[in-house]
Length: 218
Image (cartoon, rainbow, N blue to C red; front, top):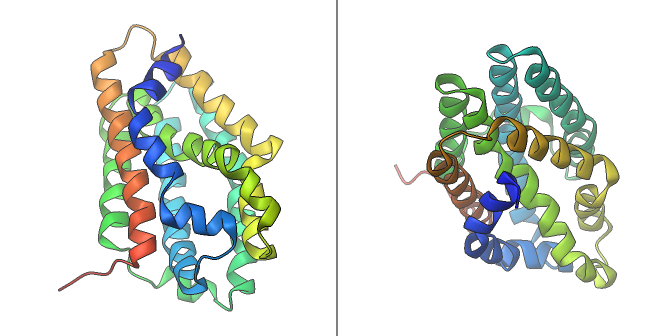
């Protein structure tokens, strides 16, 4: 079993809950209320901007091999997820000002802070491990729920979901897993499991945040 497989097995219960989250199931089935999807897109776009910062931080403190791969992943993400999001923003009747001027929800703020802190203050392998659940879980969500797309009559939702079934996206996940497998060998496995579990917990909470359209109470 590779290191990334070991990390994945460690959080299987959390990921199974993600696969069955109401937001995920309703999105893949095409029945998710559009306002919830708009809320999600705004929050996730801001999150992805932070992910670019994380990959840049990892690259800045790494040897040339990790730095090159981290920037390559950032580019692949820009040409898959972010390109898709820019199209969606207009289709949803939103503007970039709407998106970038929206304050991150509490869960989103906490998740972004966790990732940026880990990538900025700790060795590159810790940053890579912390961001891996985000990329990898989206691919597995799509694989687990792809049968639902056959009955999904909402073209907007189908288009969004299919990004995570694309060869380009799968290649990005594979590259990130390979980095963790290669540079995590011999590292403190308990520390990496802790970070991977935190990232996975935040992934579940992010879906929950979007479904409940979480806002600051004060």
